[in-house]
Image (cartoon, rainbow, N blue to C red):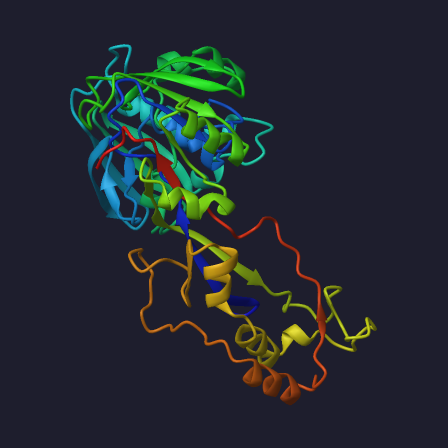
Length: 382
């Protein structure tokens, strides 16, 4: 991979407890949604909330395997036409029948929304045409072969056209347009505080585990853990790294984690002749970009102690990998080993490349690679 050091750490994904025995469980997320409109903005916390109330045509399990969703089957007609068949007789919360027109409306809606900081239109731009064959069947035409269509469709929530048509993004927080097919129904929302949900007994995936659920938003990790320990909530995500040891040792808590697709890696500015990110050791300008030399990139890879990062910085919640996806995911290549930590080999490679004294590199990071698992209160069981 030119320009990328695959010294990635596949980190543990935080999960909410799956079998809390409280009658009306209260769960706390590590962030607050930016919008309840399921097509407006796609950070993780928005998706975590929306997927309780809305379904997608195709679903993806925890290991990135595609599963039927609102569409119980699909087939490829030719290189750019897909046909989907909806589960027959399925209804929204309001009692309205789910039809192909609702799906077509939902697929077309993201591109109409303005001012989204990161919307969903990127997942639908390859679709150039939609047609309803009948109420339960639709065909999608793409702008050429589109092997990732099914994967992209796992991100687009299906809304009731009659209820959501013309509804402004901000009005979803007031309950307008919140007519979904998911396991839980919208009850109320308090900005930066909580969303209240009630069970949907007619969900296609089956009756949900609880009659009523409260999802709290507590961004501060210490406060989130304190809420769990005090009994204010029954489950949290994102335990602070400094508290991991005590949480794991606490017999009153249940700790859970799952390997995710999150990858922490270094992307190297190797594609241009000059880069402001690399200088000589004394800070002076170099005549050319060292990162353009494969030997320098290999030296950087050998100089990184992945095991130390995984065990120390990530508190044991990550693992070194030579791949860009976990072992259970599509695309994993078992022939790619984890590059070994070998400082002497790194020095030799730098010398061969003409940098026996090394270079100075500025590394810019958007976030800490440390991740956190989830705990649940004593009432939790598996």
